Each structure stands twice: as C-alpha cells, then as structure tokens.
Image 1 (cartoon, rainbow, N blue to C red):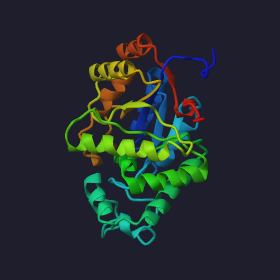
Image 2: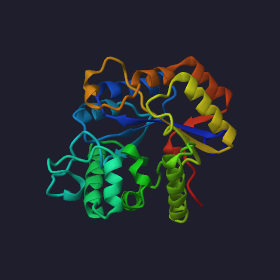
Image 3: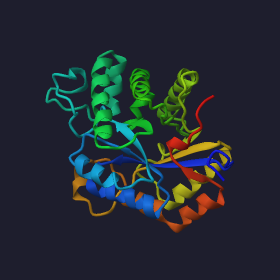
Length: 285
C-alpha cells in the first residue's frame, strides 16, 4: 500500500534543535533509529553545526527542516552591520521572543534584516548537502505576522511550501495569542499552495515531555480526528556539558528516553498512526 492510499492519520514526530550540541544531534539520530522520531529541524547558528550536519548526511530516512532563528544564545550568521535591527549593542541576537516581539510590534525589527539572516540560514543547510522539506522557527517566531511573511516569501523562493502550524491548548494570554496567530496564518496560506499538519502538540509540553505526557498527547492527536498531525519534541543524550550555556530548564534526556520507549512506540501503533515526514503531507489541490 502506498502512502497516498494509506488512510491512517499521518504522524510527524519532529525533533527540534538539531545541532544545538553534538549530544543533542546524536540523541535525535538515535531516537530516529531506535524510536519514533521521523523528522528534525536544524539550527545553523551553533558551534556544533558543522559536525552535526556531517552526521545527518548519513541518515537518509529522516525528514529535514530549517529551524530558523532570530533569537537565542548563539550569534547570527551575518554581521551586525548587515542585520542591525536583529542584534543588541554587542552584535548578539535578542535572547527571547519576550524581547523580540515587542520590538517587532513597535516597528523596530527590519523585515529586510530578517530576510537576509533567514536566507543565510537556509543556504547554510542546503549548502551542507541536505534536502529541506519544511520550515519552523526557534521559539515559534513565525507565528508573528511580519516573521510569517518573511518565511513564506523565502519558502516560495526556494520551493519549500511546508510549515509548522504551532498550536496551544492553554487558556492564558500566550495560548490564546498562539491560536489567534495560527488561524491568521492558515487563512493567509490557504490559497498559496502551502501545507501543514492539521493538528499539533509540543508547545505546551516543551522541555518536559516524558513518556506519560507523550502517551496522553498522542491520544489527544488521535481523538482530534485530524488526518495529519505533528508532535514536536526536544531530545538529547544525557551528560552534555555543552548544554550548560542554554539555561532553558529542558529535560532533554527524559524526552529522548520517552521517544525511544516501548510504551510510546506501542501507542503509536495502537492508535493507528502512519509515521512520516513533512514530505508526506498531501499537496493542496
């Protein structure tokens, strides 16, 4: 039976932050080979990028996206002179969406700067010999309208029209805003030949996605009745001193163990999912 004829709901299990550190990259590859990870998205700004993409070139069965970054602890690919509105006085990216988004709302982020930096990040991945099937962003900045429009423009210029549609079940200000922005994105992309998973989980659980939480999340995806779904995760092998510079409080090793656990693999089969990648999403008519 071909993937096109398979009526089971598609499940994309994407591991974010490939190349964050070598141990994160190794954990993602291992969770693909031993567990349920089917896809990953690559950070280009990190010290481990070159060594990590060399590992990824040997894995021909995993989907690959670009994890576009305009915030974070690592320096941008371009210089402060080239992207002045994206950096602080020391030439470093703003650390968090909590700084970036108020600046964007105030018109202090130049979309041309963002376009140049994101284009350089996409080029870094493709120049490494990797085939890109989707885009997502560090800290989900692509939900913001200006960032969204830049990502869409760049995607169309390189022939990639698959994107993460981040969602939240929370009812606080962040969850409500995420849902409103996702609906806006869907409306704007519905006539432009783009596609995305119809349901998503992983934002609310980010950094604390143990096996129990993962089983529950998979149950919710199955119960939604969506024909295409994504579970986003952040795995990494334990004992990784290189991660000390990222003070996120994430439980990388616990997520790695969950993705490789027998109980999680069994529930994927029990719920009738068809594991796949963004390349398996149906092309809009």
